[in-house]
Picture 1 (cartoon, rainbow, N blue to C red):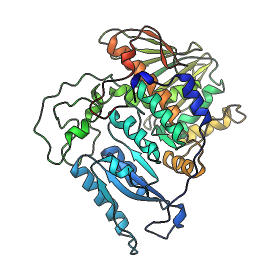
Picture 2 (picture 1 turned 90 degrees about the horizontal axis):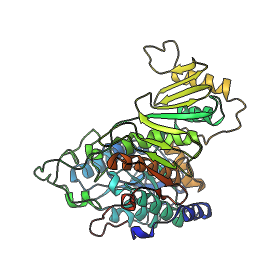
Picture 3 (picture 1 turned 135 degrees about the horizontal axis):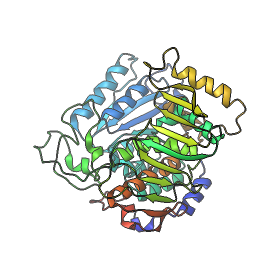
Picture 4 (picture 1 turned 180 degrees about the vertical axis):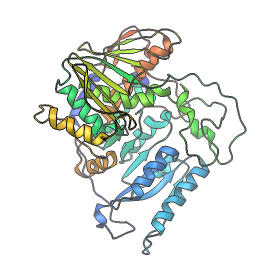
Length: 448
């Protein structure tokens, strides 16, 4: 796909609205009869680091899912994932289970006609290419956030999903946690008055790659790991040796990630925009914090609300009558300068709990709410349900695209030290900015 052929925002909306769901037929070849054969979903996993290890463990415990295959460019991680699946399923052998296949190349996994869906949790620079290949191969997708490595990829992936009619859930799981939904409903229903500003708290933008070369890791296809990105010298900080239990720092390289702006920022900006009600648009202006700054960049929305990347409590909404603060396991509602409900610190907020404070807030302030947001109690369940119903999940690809584009715009302001205007309908610069920032130079055949 040629970067110069980016779909416009108009075509983006047209394809999103006009997508027709393709019929979905589940295979009957399964390994257990505990659940009716035609209700099992055959799933493959691509990228077997820490994140997908967590997803794998979750899906292995579901009777409606059969984990059919795993894939990783690292031999140790690939074999470890295969062994994990076979150990779990081996406990239920009934003579029909044939084992879990393991692949070094995701294209071999996607070529399997019996695999219905895939979970993609590779480094960011692979997200778009594999996601597009997956939906073109007829797979439904759970794709980790941030959705893509750049703006061009976000638009191209969204179009591919719409053209395919497949289900795509972005892994922005905070939308499936009640405290975040209630916080956004409070804002959307005007409980804190007219929304004026938002503060989102997360770490730094990414520096350029500056790691020293280390001896190659046996069993790792480093060229394939780099894929669409540049072929940089191997360093174990990016792809750890052996099986690891941490999140590698490839996120902190512009070549392969986007720093904390596209890591935690993809979570918190996602919630901020849910509360704003701009899932289909995004900001209209980006204000730089200045050269070499790591905080202070701002996204400005059409209604005048300003979102600032700063220090705070996670996601903080400030209105004319009050404020709402929300983070994982934390929630506060302030009205008239006084805390009405909240749970931020178990050592401070003794005698209560997050669930209690959120439920009390909902009962008191949202009983007759005019705006009720999509309710999902579990991000994986929501995806699996969408696969069955063919209805879009809570964080559909288009939502993930709007979120990640906002993250990329913020990063652009940090990388360039400049401010610019953004056309959120056509998804391009309205004033200032360089179109080259919207895409990247792709390597070899890995062109999006």
